[in-house]
Image (cartoon, rainbow, N blue to C red; front, side, top):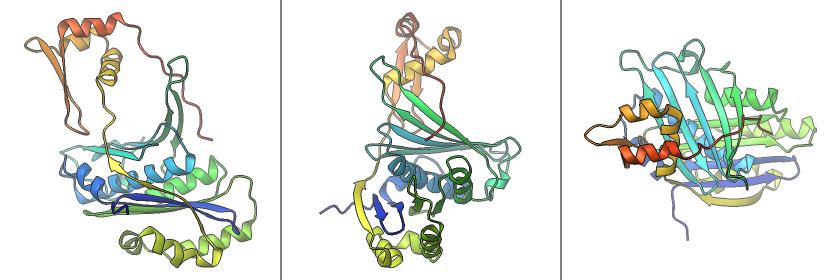
Amino acid sequence: MNTSTDRLLRFHLPAAHVRGAIVHLQESWASIQSRADYAAEVRNLLGESLAASALFASILKTDGRLSIQIRGTQGLRTLFAECTAQGHLRGIARVADDLPSPKDLSDLGEGAILALTLESPPRANGEPHRYQGLVPIEAASLSGVFEDYFRQSEQLPTRLLLSADGDRCAGLLLQVMPGSNDADDWQRASALFETLGAEELLATDAETLLHRLFHEESPEVLAKQPLTFACSCSRARIEEVFQTLGVEEAMASVIDGQAEVVCEFCGKAYAFTSDELSQVFERPSATVPSPDSIQ
């Protein structure tokens, strides 16, 4: 029996032509939080972003990784949350020490950006494939921002509830099946969705929620997936970062005979001697094609 506190459940409401997913995170959320002391507002936004990344990775069925990145110009500088096809999660936030933490997304500052990125594994030619959508920040909540995005950019009506506190984070996503256009079915599913509150979402397991909300729709469980904190850093990815910086800046990082890079997600250290850095620039750099839109 799987006793993990971190799981995602995908389901289908066949009569309403709606798909959905429910996610709960506890152990992985504790691991990610343990690496920084975030203000409550930043912490909760990071938790909601992690839950959203797991939900979107399941619905969009990526075989690589899906990430959510927020860049602000005020108290929150950068927030990053990622979920892979294997159910591996990681996340981090960077803040400005001299500015107050944002109360909601409207406090991110002028020019704030939210990006949703899908990255597939390398193809036969060795190049990964990326799809990226830039999400307008026109709502105060992360749920509202993504609901607007899927409705306007992807033409897929979507309902999203996200919640996080210091111990848990969770999310529920409903989305019209591609090709379905029955407004009455969607309105009925949305009305049931509206009966769920953030605290109930955090406190109630997925199976109970699914029955409590949608038992009249004869829900079908499609899959259950365990989730865990895991970092995707590697020496090869650090080498790509050095190639992006350029040889002059990379060599300037060498101190006492070596350059050391510490992963901010997991704390693992990577060391490079001057000769090893030179070899990095003797190899051809990996090229990544320009992002397309999410489909």
